[in-house]
Image 1 (cartoon, each protein chain N blue to C red):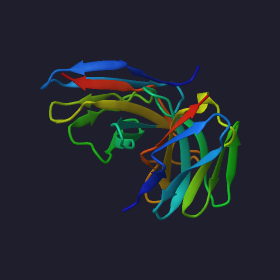
Image 2 (cartoon, chains in turn green, brown):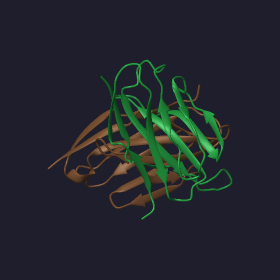
Image 3 (cartoon, rainbow over the protein chains, first blue to last red):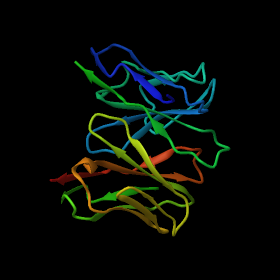
Image 4 (cartoon, rainbow over the protein chains, first blue to last red):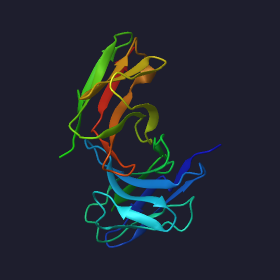
Length: 115
Length: 111
């Protein structure tokens, strides 16, 4: 079955630690995205990637980093510079810019809690 | 500033009681409006894409419509399993394929 997987489902971080969230897709999509969701707020874009080895900052990129070495994978690192990292993190993917159909499909999410 | 506003924030319905959710946007160059359903603790599930004013799409008890300034998600004879948060998002001409999301409407359908 095609889809997006995220791991782990739950993640606990001590202050000062970097943690990496995994996102894998087998939909053959070119574009991938990372969002953060906080209670009472809409999804906010952290980073996105249109193609392998290229990515752009979203609205709230400070304290985060990404890589896109493979089409299927788009890991997100939450660094110690992110002052309020406790949130629900969502990964999504979509077809490329040239497509008329650009719906984003989401993974199941990772809930990160800072201890 | 481009904005997406959803109303109401929360809605409680009795089973079978039809209603509508609203998504209004103040953006220029709309290139698509998207509706998603999100269950607690899960990722959003894609429902509909609307591209032009006057367009309508249906899926089971849900019907989405689009005007030049807003979209409605009509829920006909809802069932308890329709309880979820419904998210609206817009795609702009100026952006790549990035979406701007509203804060969502939390729907609770009681039996």
